[in-house]
Length: 160
Image (tube, rainbow, N blue to C red; front, side, top):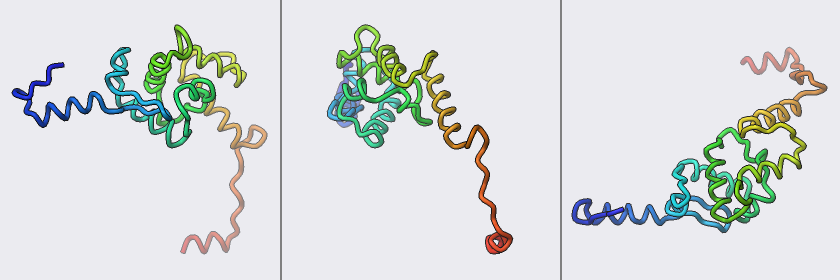
């Protein structure tokens, strides 16, 4: 891309050049720039930033290989992480040459065996299955857990 100082102004041209080469996605000790992701036609930069935050802050992964071998798609089935972020993760697997021809599919396939899931069609399926498991864990014997009884004196003290 031609970032003409003359047309854009030197400050804007410099900022744009820095943005292209700045690290956008960090997975542990692995760093990916916009240029790295664009090389394999991955342009989902907002999803990349979100994925970076979750993998590093919440899951504290070592690197991309650690995610491929040790982090399940079920671990990433979080409300604020969607299928687009998984596409970005697949791009990172591809850049690191993990998982062969279809790295994202191979990653899911390897981890669905661990979770004994037979029918995974999409990431949305995984998210729904995780929701069901979490919901079942919050109930007792398939029935909703009852709220604890509150005495009339406790009710009165809360009301005032």
